[in-house]
Amino acid sequence: MPPTSADSPPARARLVALDVLRGFALCGILVANVVPISAAVATDAPVTTALAASGAGQVDWLHLLVDQRFFPIFSLLFGVGFSLLVESAADRVARPRLVLLRRLLVLLALGLAHLLLLWPGDILTVYAVVGLLVLLPSTWFPRWAVAGLAVICLVAAILLAGGPYALVPGLFLLGSALTRYGVTRRVESSTRVPAVLALVLAAAAVPAVWAQASFERVGDTDLLGYRIVLQVAGVLLAGMYVCALLVLLRTPASRALRAVFAPLGKMALTNYLTATVLVLGVAHVVGHPERWSSKTVLVIAGTVLVAQWLFSTLWLRRFRYGPLEWGWRWATWLRRPPLRITDDAGERHPASTLVA
Image 1 (tube, rainbow, N blue to C red):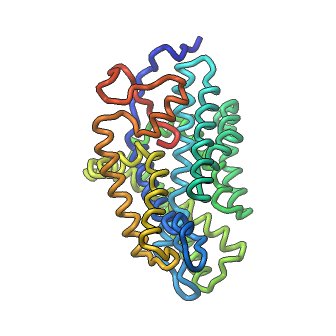
Image 2: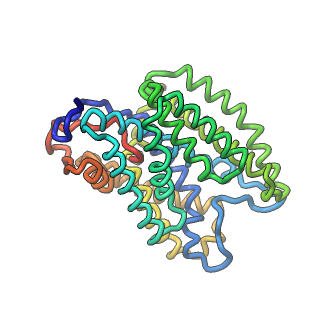
Image 3: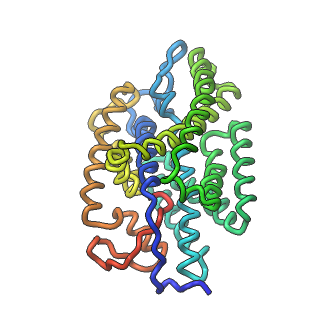
């Protein structure tokens, strides 16, 4: 019989590699989102794309390396975190799916508030809806079925060129399958496998990115072929980034990477939402975001990320969770978790959370 919510949860080691990956993805997402977020205050021509190509005959390399390259990582990690939470909930309560349902409904409320009040490009609403319609029902399926559905969803999304959001169900299921097959628990102890995968994905990504650049150079961005290549290049580069970072985490660079990205990743929900407020503030002050160059975008994103890193680092020295992460956890478990590090030393940290 599963334990009740009053019982102490079993000890679970937090996977710091997931925090690093999440923080890394958050940085790339912010770079890609600076222009779309600032479009809300554009005064001249409308801004609807992230780091779009400069026009026929020109290609923005920042766009090729960043745009639609990092949200697949975030989506994959959401699926990973969901299955880790399934394991935690099953150990703690008699009806774990109610815990998952509450968590997704709270995320939906946050996403809708973000979407309606700040920025219509919010991704949390999409994550919550797909989580309710795809991830939650998948908990009844065997892991081989989840893995198979992940492949089917990803292939269909790419071939139908349904846009970036069409990849979300497949990436969610892929992340969930990786956790259920035990791959997630081994990410901090393997070097050879991610190294080989990084090389394979890089070799596959080069022609895909070249094809994308070729389409953009001649201005053929409305063609079906371009939309397919864009998604293929995005998934391949995202996979390469993940594998390369996992390899680096097994080198002496690990300490620096953890110091830079883990604080951002542990407070990803708080940082994702506050980034919108900060970018909108900069857009109001600077003005004319539709004229910003890639260099300007990098300066703005870098400034926001440095501020968020400082806040996250200082906050986590005293508190267990970010402010929004703490409230989300409270609503998920219907029990106030200790916030200060000195409070209730018996509280265990989960291996990961859905987003933060």
